[in-house]
Length: 139
Image (cartoon, rainbow, N blue to C red; front, side, top):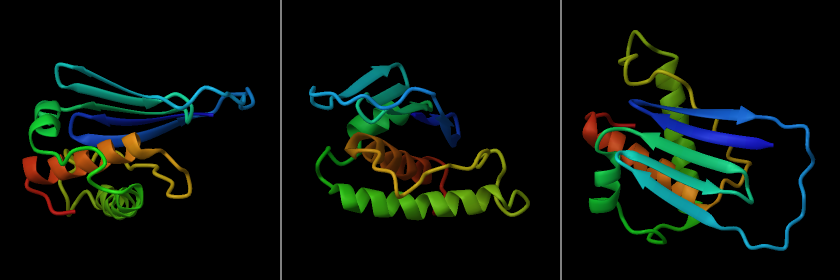
């Protein structure tokens, strides 16, 4: 199974793509890769097959300059916060007459039962922090 979490422009979308191959056990340790080009941030954990791509002008600068460093928050904290933010985000997507539909374009398919790993949760959490500050929204 290949899962991708996209954060593009002013919205966050989770895309799940199923493949027909079965998981293969690997003795290699999981490695997280961080790639930044202009205002595009990509974090991938190949062993978990999850990826977050953030394309939002200013997010990379904000992430480097204002975000708390990695390992500042525990994984459990990030997962709990992301679950709450995703629920609120999805609620706002369903209410376009009440909330700006240009900000909340697509719902997020974040499943709290899936272990996305630290990097994916860290990036998603920080995107929510950036989004709230940049667009003056309170999730």
